[in-house]
Length: 126
Image 1 (cartoon, rainbow, N blue to C red):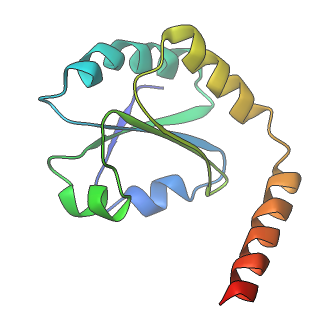
Image 2: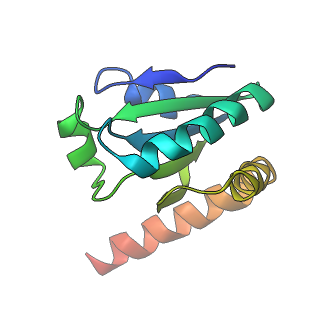
């Protein structure tokens, strides 16, 4: 699957869908973003079961601010609507492949349990 563009209008729907969505937050002026783009594109061709989305932070500044993106590129991985990975910086191809493999291998029942526990703790602190 080729990459898709996400915007303020379709971001939430895209990342909350079942399955895995990997988002690359980038800008046209960003050198590391341009260097990472071929790695991201190649991975999208190798993993047809994963949605690969590009977020242009310049054209979607409100969304980038809401996501608290402070440096680019920033990679985010969502699985079944849950953010399971977020990190600024471009990954080399082997590390990116490893990340995709790890996200595919997650025990989502365990992840949901951890999220529920974190929410419960946060509510207890308020």
